[in-house]
Length: 470
Image 1 (spheres, rainbow, N blue to C red):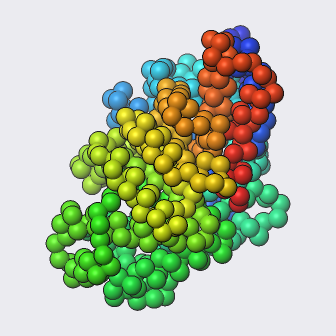
Image 2: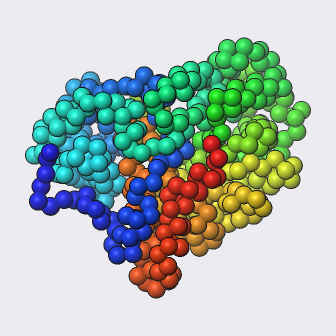
C-alpha cells in the first residue's frame, strides 16, 4: 500500500463540524447507491469487462480530464491521440497538481483512495509508483466492471439508451444470477426530435429497422416511439431522459406537426418556429406515454454542445467542447408542465439545469405542479455536469431548500461514463452533511440528531428508492 504521513482523504474529509461528522458516519456513509442516471456501457457490465491499465478505466472518454489537460497546454496526442496509455497517464499526473479548486482534484484522490488504497497525491514524483500499484490491482476480479460495482455498494443503475437499442446487454445482465445489482435502461429519444439535424433521415431509417415498421408520416413516428417505449418498459425501463438545449413550448396542432414532418421527409427547409412546434407536439405526446407507463421524465436542459467546430469535425461529440447555454426558460417550462397537467398526463418529472442562474426559476416552477399522493412529484435535479462540485451542489440544495423542500429531494446521480465515479455519491453525501452540520453550528436548525439523521438518510438513498419504485 502506498502511504504518506499526511492523509488527504481522511475520515472527516469535507466534514467541518461534529454534527456533520455524526450525520455522515452514522446516517449516510454506508447506505447503498441508486444511480438513476449515468452513461456507463451496459455491454461492459454484461461482459464483465476487465481493464489492462488505469488509463483504460480512468482516462478513456473522460472529457472532464481532457478539458483540464488542454487548459494546461497538453498536446492532443496525449489526450485523445495515439500516445500510449502509460504516456497519457503520466501526462495526466503532471496536470493533477494544478487542478486545485476544480472537483477533479478531489475526485482523483478520492477514487485513488477508495478503490486502490493509494494515500498519496498524484504528481510526476508519484506517478510511476501509482501506475504500477493500480495496474497490479486491476488484475484481480474485484476490478472487473461488476467487481467495481459490487465493492461500490451499488443497488441499481439506470443506463441511457436510444430507442433503436436492442437492450440485449440488459437482458444478458438479468440472466446473470451471481450479479445482484439491477441494471435497467432509460429511454432517450432525443434524435427523433432533432428534425433539422443533417442525420435525421438516416436516424429514421435506424428507427424503422429497430421497430420493423415503416415511417412515412407523423402517425407512424408516434406509433413507433410508443411501441419502443413499451419494448423498453417490458425490459425494466422506468425513466425517460431528454438532453436538450431548451424546453420548447410553441402551440402546434397535429395537422401542423404532420405538415412539418412531411417537409422534413422531403428534405425541405424547417424554420426555427416550425422546429419548436414539432418538438413541442412530440414531447407532449411522449409525456402522455410516460405518464401512462408510470415512468419518470427527466429533462437535462441548457447544454450548448459542440462549440468548437474544428475539433468536432476531428473528434466528434462528447469530447469536451460543450458549455453552458443562456436562454429563456421560465414561461416555456411552466406552460409545458401545465399542458400535461391539464390533461392529467403529467408524469413524475426531474428538471436539471446546466446554467445555475435558472436554479430559482426551476425551484419555483416545480412548486406549481406538485401532487397529492406523491412526495416531491416534480423535482429540481441535482447539480449537473459543470455544477456537480461543492459550490454547485450546495447552491442547488440551498436554492431548493429556500424555495421548496430539500427533505423531499431524490439526491445524487453520477451522470458519468466511468465505473470509478460512484465516489461522487460519497462526495455529495459529505457535502450534504457538512451543509446541514453548518446550519446546526450556526444555530439555524436544532440539533435533533435522529430527525436530521433521517432527513440525511432519505436524501442519500430512501427518497430515490421510494420515488422511482423500481
